[in-house]
Length: 408
Ligand code: SAH
Ligand code: SF4
Image (cartoon, rainbow, N blue to C red; front, side):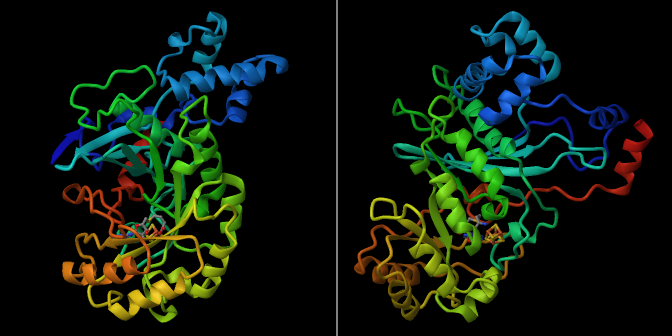
């Protein structure tokens, strides 16, 4: 495991007066991660005439999201005057990388700090994980800071501070990954980018399986997917984007209709009494209701199956009878099953099922026709695996607030 601390000092320390003043000053907004509509609005605000907006927004989208430009000077087909006007009003800033950890298996985890949104906020922190595999690379992105839901086996659910990320903040996670991996079109990988080198791109797939419940941030997730899937920008197609939900049934249809993303369901139990405990949103939307929403999910088919995630918890949900019930429950649905060995975190109340038990469970599922159902755990040594993400973001302490106020 390697850890690079990319900040100068302990993130929990009180800010210096200069940092407090900088945090309190309204920073110029960044254009990175904006939709084409957002870019058009930015262009209009610096005086670009209406008839040019579409074309200019397409140019910016190309430079920002296809080439990864971090400097307005690189935008050679944009006039010097316009570049100057944009540079006055906007930046191309990315979230700050607080730390980067690299697992022995090549998985990378970044702790990112978002720009401050006001004087009582030093900037929310979130985590993003890159998982290199044979022939593809998956980026696991966060949609919220923390999570309002409290699934009993998930570390993120214990984090207090919660807000939705903006669409640009979601997209920025992909931009940061491409920066660090040297994964821009025409770019060269930086030294030490130990990722697959089959000639293709490094980040080929996106999963919304980081921090947060994406269907509680659906507007932001929808806009982020629009930018990520744009063929002239980041260019990661909708079939390579998977959104995982704990079961926010009323938003599932919209997710399908408005994003065309692949759906994953955090099922984890086959009976309501157990699912009520593991995934408490089940009390609002029980299993039968969830299954009905899956049956009518727009675009699901044998070629585009719904993934059902099932975390293996020792002695809790891992019996052969439950495996058989799982198969029965999914009968007739275009489904894939993903058994996730439980990833423990400090103080977690469960243990991972024994390997023999997982094998017995997966054998039952396999015989029912579901191929390779067990997910290989990745990045466990750096706490980067599913459900282990939890940033150090806390509510700002009184001392820090006073420092900010004194600086104003
Ligand atoms: N909130 C969404 C997406 C983020 S969680 C959801 O719940 O689906 C991504 C996946 O990790 C979910 O299937 C979640 O149930 C699972 N998960 C959470 N904690 C875990 C843990 N400690 N070990 C293994 N999987 C976990
Ligand atoms: Fe939230 Fe998903 Fe964790 Fe449940 S499993 S607490 S919904 S992030």
